Image 1 (cartoon, helix red, strand yellow):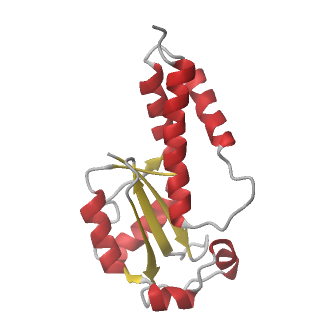
Image 2 (cartoon, rainbow, N blue to C red; image 1 turned 180 degrees about the horizontal axis):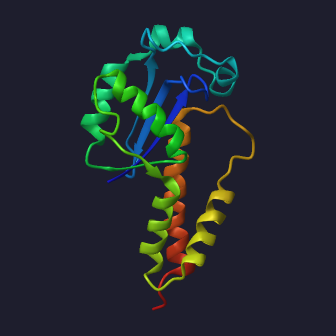
Length: 181
């Protein structure tokens, strides 16, 4: 099953760590957690806090321990196709989370959401649809679904947006590019 993930982080620095994670399955089921920092995780950027609106104090008081989040992710997500809008960043934070919980950093792997969108379009449109048409459709759906205002970045709404885009790409590809009857 396809799953879209998103992380929010302490900063965009080398020593940043995940502060929130969410994932949403293609059937709409979702999970989100604030993540309690480990004692070794000290990097913090107030610029990042302004973007996601999560304070370090909130994480310390309400966050789920790293080990518990990692265990749940491994249990629930292993064997599924995992996608993120920015897999290089989200993969960094996923690796940090897994390593902090004592797991190999590649126990779960992320691919780019755009790949899931293109695959969905290809399946709906048929194998003879030119790749340039697939790419054009995916870019159009992404542009159409960009929020009009810049909301606070939070993991669950961001993961849900990726799912919505995937669904819209499938529908649009079937309607606009699908095989003629």
